[in-house]
Picture 1 (cartoon, rainbow, N blue to C red):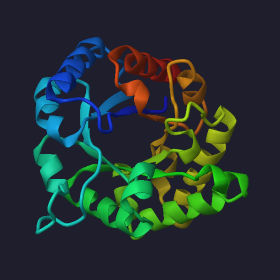
Picture 2 (cartoon, helix red, strand yellow; picture 1 turned 45 degrees about the horizontal axis):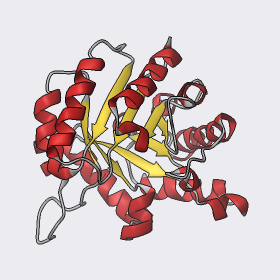
Picture 3 (tube, rainbow, N blue to C red; picture 1 turned 180 degrees about the horizontal axis):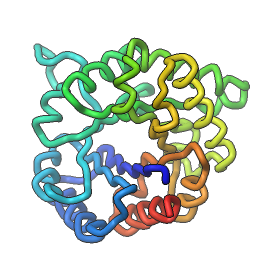
Picture 4 (tube, one colour; picture 1 turned 30 degrees about the vertical axis):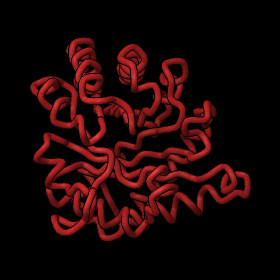
Length: 256
């Protein structure tokens, strides 16, 4: 039975009261999910404390949406890994395509953040993915290899048990498009081979690789049934309890 992680990235949505109401609904509706399925919610920084207090003691885990690689310092507006840990986070999204596109994230900064997260015991959800132009030009494999190798550079073999990778084709994020299960599986299998062959990680078979990109209740199960897909990084469909719970239920069905 493969483990399944379903992480909701709330992006820049939900004021504190709204986030609290959604967290309360999810806590109630996901109280009896199967042990093999781990639901994660990643609210905006302003709502972390509120959501943490609500989901404490439940099956839900808390995640941050980004972090800085330094432990502390004169970095106005930034949040450190230790701060996220202190707020109750178990994991953190790193290198999301929107961070790469709008805020200058690079493979080098992703790598720094991965190491900083691991140092304090946060599980990094490291995102990789190609643009539509790159896919059309046949560059998908080259882009994924570069991002995986760059982002995981110098990660020790024994640290891979704490790493989560998310494949998010940029052309499928918020567009309504999504990779077919076959397209997604092909890239997920590539990522797993890379970790096994380039990093000599014996745990590569256990590496959780999530798919992100217009995952909805209607397509979640077909995606999750692919052999190298271990769940999803969910954007818009994580903003309502009904749709997110349905996707988590698809994860349960996939591990049955």
